[in-house]
Length: 189
Image 1 (tube, rainbow, N blue to C red):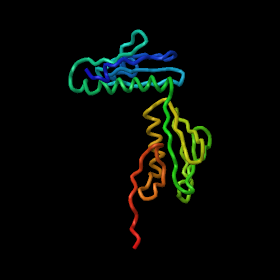
Image 2: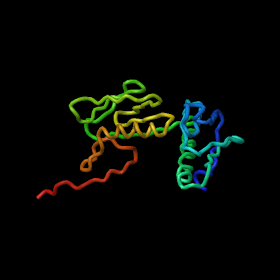
Image 3: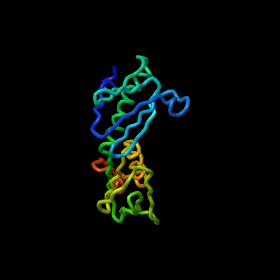
């Protein structure tokens, strides 16, 4: 058994998990659809074929149909996805970005949009997809929040890609506590 996959997922108070066959939900799709709802919202995901979720005594256990190589490799993954859904609807996820550079700054234009000054001749507008919100505690930091871990990470990566940290002065957008490798410039004679 997968060490990750066989670990049960504890379900906190206020969170409900339902699992039903994807054929019941979307026609003839082969997997199982898991829906997790809680105080933060509701998330739904289709699991791989042969992976099921069993609910008992306030815990969810992810099980696989057989011991084939493809089932073993997906067992721990599906368990981690369901655990992240439970954590997301109960607590939520956040990624914090830091802006480094003279004149580089961020301004909030509501909870779901930003305006960034990144050294270009124009401002860069950023709009959040559904389920994502932004906080700008000061001009040089951005916090991306949401209940879907994958979506929070993707939105943070998209913002970072607008101006990656450059290796000479370190200017750009980086994650908090990200280590940027610096290069030596030209040696003066």
